[in-house]
Amino acid sequence: DTAGSNLQYVVPLASLKKHKKFLKGNDLAVTGHFKRENDQYHRALQEAYWNVEHTESEAKTKATRALRAAFVTLPSLSDSLNASRPSLKVYLAGEPLQDFADFTAKSWSLQAVRRYLDEAIQLSLTKTSASTRQEEL
Image (tube, rainbow, N blue to C red; front, top):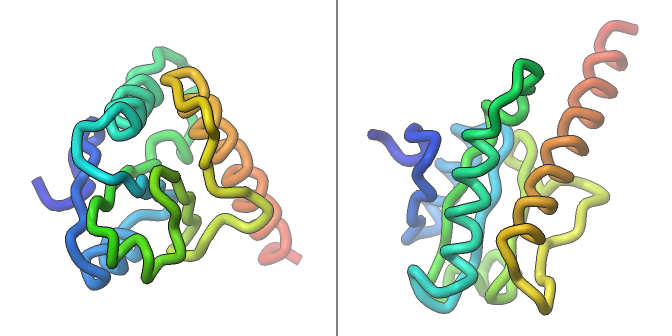
């Protein structure tokens, strides 16, 4: 699998170049910034991401199918991206999702991360449909 192509896999990013390539190759991306791989925060992202991808629904949206996730554990890379650890950042078309705060909740739980991913998907749909309407005018 290429980085980010397996829907169930939260890929590791070890350089700024890989981070940029990941964002460029995925319309809707979330990156997790953690102190170490497989800590409680990383596991919450993995499980929430898996749950989003496996939600049974006929109305599964294009944005849900487009969502890809990756993680960073290198302090220097997180620092260069202005990301605290632990945190989640969402990108739409390679740019930070406007009007959507990074996830840095004090109480990380599967439910909280899942809600954050669901909200990111919904906001991306709103932004995408607004830009499509602008292009049609």
